[in-house]
Length: 239
Length: 201
Image 1: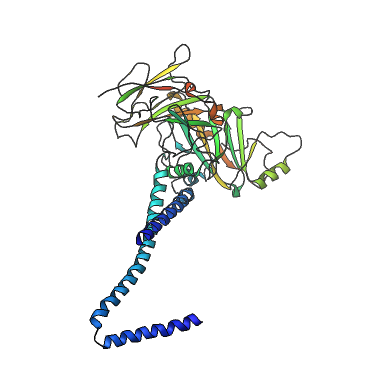
Image 2: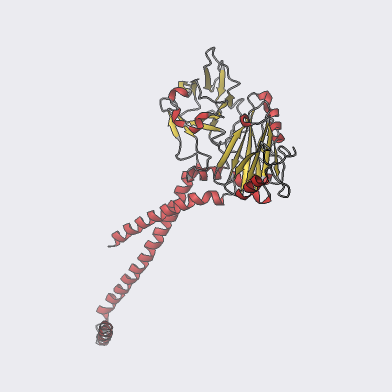
């Protein structure tokens, strides 16, 4: 109460003083100061609004862009790396992480359930180099216990029309085996003897997908190690 | 002062970005129109699975929308709405490996392969908790039912049937095996679980 009553007259006197000063002809020195004060007030007010808009815009754009980035390709995380392979046992189950769920929703994918099978993917060879369509690879060894498996190769995007590869994968029944049950698949742009899997693209990165059907390892991925999965060995790169 | 305000605004922006990011990721499955749950609805009126990835060269009726389908597996979907009654999926175990999985909007909640078949047939009944209790109450004492009863976490969902063609010559057989599975609604008027395998094929 005392404060407000004190402020009122003070403001009044300053106004009156200014009016007196204005009338006494010193307007030229006072007006720029007043304008400056007004401008500074407006600037601070508008800068506050500007900062608010800036924060909202930054947050909205950054949030949407990062969400789009995280869910546009494959699963960002949640896989179990085993050598050069990555196992995705929980991609389609009820306890999958929200990112996997969002990725599935955006792609319209139906991942394998735990009781059905498991997906393993590989995007690099055993030395960590990205799988390149210009190179030849040898996939050899054994696979985890499963009733059936398929191994497929895919490039990025849809294949060019008229250039669909003659074969995009092998099933466990189709494969030619050694006498000891081992097998070797040759992934190469050139025709190879034995189990030849042609490269799906002339160039660019490729990915391998190993799908195990009706397998007990889907429930216990920890039991897998490098020796139970096919090794991916680079044989050489054509120019 | 103004620099401090700028950094404060940037920090607030980053916090907002985090909130927007989390909210967007969580909202994508709910509002997606291209996800399997929404697209599988087209199969609701059918009494057999809608083929979404065929092998024998016959294009699927509704377009093939699986992003990376296995080239050796024929896939069909059956959508269900348990308000209409429990859904019965009946499959005959053939020479090819067959698996049936049950999916809700949040993910798969049950899967079984033809190794679980009893006398060559696989009968799965998806039901709500109330329908399950009703079926239990209607069971005749001493009578053995071979139905596998599954309580669904949500009212709506879809079943996925996969048949693997191990050899290219089996592709047409695999497609036919998917079509031969029946997805029917057990009429709520008649007691469920009394005649196993009554679904029309």
